[in-house]
Structures are given as structure tokens and as C-alpha cells.
Length: 143
Image (cartoon, rainbow, N blue to C red; front, side, top):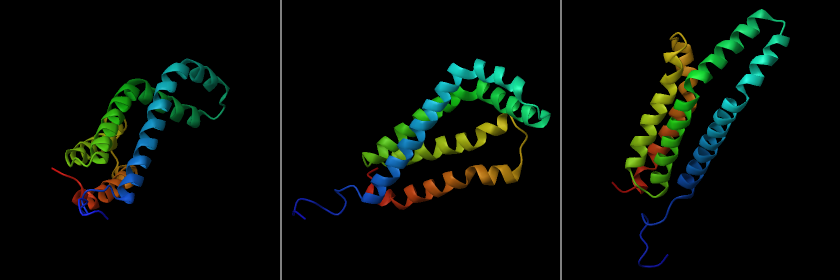
């Protein structure tokens, strides 16, 4: 290590891995939400071939949710990308943006579907883990 380098001047490998995983997740979600808008008409036509009425109703409900919220999902994941980029650049404010976006993403389905504590816990599990892992890396970020 050079004398000009301090332990806080390099990006830790774990923070790199977290950021890359978050970018991959956000990218896949943005692409799939955008593609849904393009193919939603074709998907609704294929529902005619589903014979199980319960499954058809569930799919219709999910499609209605995506019709109403896919733009919000894209916008929130773009916010997530911004927060992760700021953390990649070792800016602590990115953590707060990321946490805010994750809270909104966890709560978004409950604006459409009935609130259920079990659903809240299960949908927030991965977000909580990532927020905790980013929190553990705040030491390496500047304010």
C-alpha cells in the first residue's frame, strides 16, 4: 500500500459485489417492467387458454397491478441505481436514497393488494438483508 493510500481510499470488494448485484437486479427489473408494457396485450390474450379460473384471476390481478404500477417500478429502480452509484462513488447519501427506495418498493404492492403482515415480511426480507449489508459498509463512505 502506498503511503498516499489510506485504508479508507479504496473501495472494499464486498461493497463492489453488493453494488454490482444491486445493479443487476435493478437492470433486470427495469427491462422486464418495460418489456411487460410492450407485450401486455398479447399476455391478456393468452389468458383465454387458462382453464383454472383461480389461476386466471390471480394472473389478471397481477397484470392489473403491473399495468398501473410498472412506470413507478421503473422510476423507483432508477432511484435505486442512483443510490447504488452514489455508494459506489463512496457517497454516504446514496445509502439513504437506497433505503428510501427500498421502503417504497416494499410498500408499493400494498397500495393495490390487501395488507398482510406475512406478505410484508416475506417481500421485505431481501431488501432488509441488502440494507443491512450496505449499512455495514457505511464506514467506507464519505458524508
